[in-house]
Length: 63
Image 1 (cartoon, helix red, strand yellow):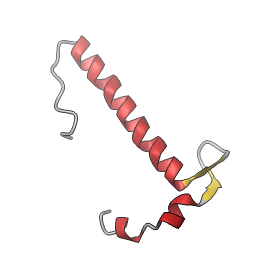
Image 2 (tube, rainbow, N blue to C red; image 1 turned 45 degrees about the horizontal axis):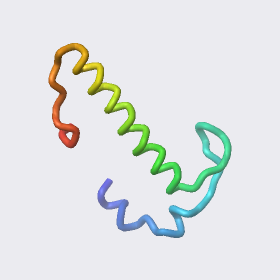
Image 3 (cartoon, rainbow, N blue to C red; image 1 turned 30 degrees about the vertical axis):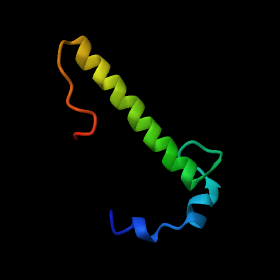
Image 4 (cartoon, helix red, strand yellow; image 1 turned 60 degrees about the vertical axis):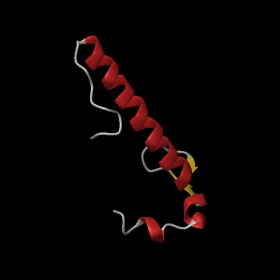
């Protein structure tokens, strides 16, 4: 995956296309931003549930 990052241009990120999953249109940057925000949200939910069960969750940056 790291070989792909240098190939991603600013113009490509600004390209607006129809979203294949949710419909509507969004740029690739908006789609990337949504994916990151979604991951953070769901990881946060998981941490809350672990704490409610008395389990100390791992550090956020560890996977």
